[in-house]
Length: 149
Image (cartoon, rainbow, N blue to C red):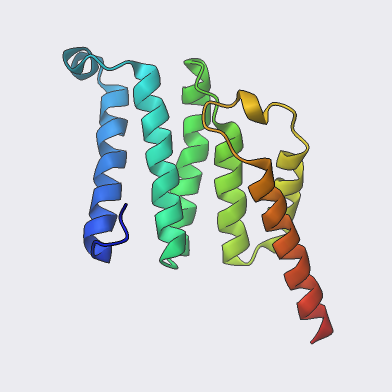
């Protein structure tokens, strides 16, 4: 996907996509002219913010990832109003970013809460339980390794 482009080009693409769908989400006339629903716009906007957060983390831009994850959390109520359920994805992004920032205990607590949820399959933007469990195991084993040194 974006692996063969330069960092700056890829960052611009991710940012522009996020901005485009944010604008479309807020502009009814533009959505109507393009024949796009508010639900589709919000869902794509949320996915774009997730991509931005992930892209930032992969490039060790943790503050940018945290900013994107925070914005994603702010989108949750707007998305819920139109039946786009993505709160689990937002929590997962925050937890993952906090983990990368060194806030391990907060991240583990958030991931444990997510793993215990029974509505994950009903989310519009799904988060895999296996990925969360793998991250918890990875975190637990890194804590054990640090304790031995």
